[in-house]
Length: 239
Image (cartoon, rainbow, N blue to C red; front, side, top):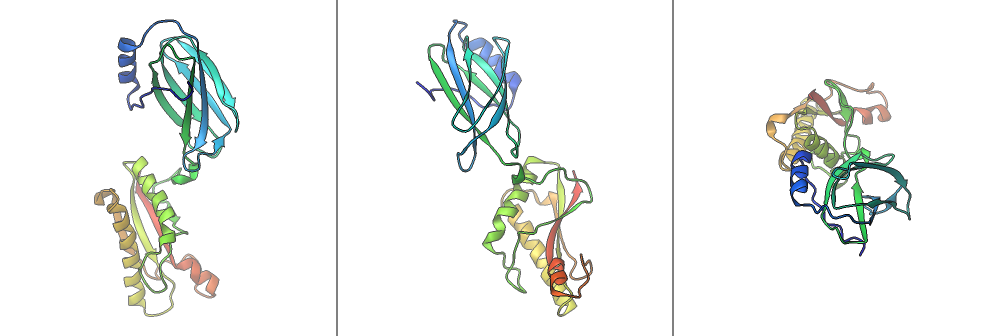
């Protein structure tokens, strides 16, 4: 029966292989293994390229799938599979599966793929990245809910790069009292830092500062340029 796949996802390939060699049956079998890739949020099927290594059988399989089809190959015994999946616009996925069944005629599995834009990539020390989809109420440090998607992208970046340290930097235009602008920029940076800390990022990896209107990104001459100066950035301190 399809989708009867018994598998274990593990962090250590070495440990998985040790278990597999002790427990998997060496009985010859003919099992049609079918695999596809799907978007982790929408479950939409994706065109994908697969590279699969059957460890115990010492066989390599490679092929592609497209929406509505699966990549299939024949397993000749219960085995441990190292699966690498590539989809344009998505992060490469690698999974280790221990296929324990030696009597099933069919197996089916779907690999969940994460879009590449769900994390910030190719970061360099000293680089400043504007959080252009983070919004506050006017003249306030009240964070609006439509900011959460991009802040969660930053959160995932920090989670996947455990040595990354950043500064959250708040900036304003030059309209109004300079001291109030300075305070507002500090408070906005602090709110974002608190958002990350409450979701598990160690405080030691984060720094927040407000620069008011002292570091404009554009001349404060027209409204379009002033809007560019009202911003929050994160700066890479260490990778």
